[in-house]
Image (cartoon, rainbow, N blue to C red; front, side, top):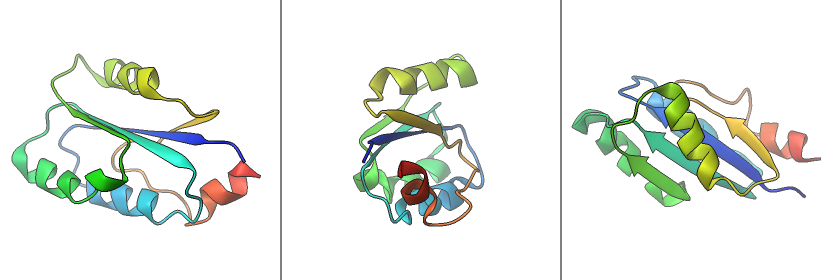
Length: 102
């Protein structure tokens, strides 16, 4: 089965925990999760800290915008397929990656 790279970009997104829960709930586990944060405040960093153990890469620093963050995430990706799962987004169901991998 192919390895999937999930790239999440974030900056002070209120629904970031929904995104994190959606990623860690996936039944397919052969993925890497690359999380690029644009320097969110402490409130959001505390939320993200709960999910860091699931992340292959976590970077929190100022960037020059959404596309800079996306390109930064791409530079770390090693999967055969890439999913941009922006903060605030969620997978439709827990089996999405499993279904797509086939």
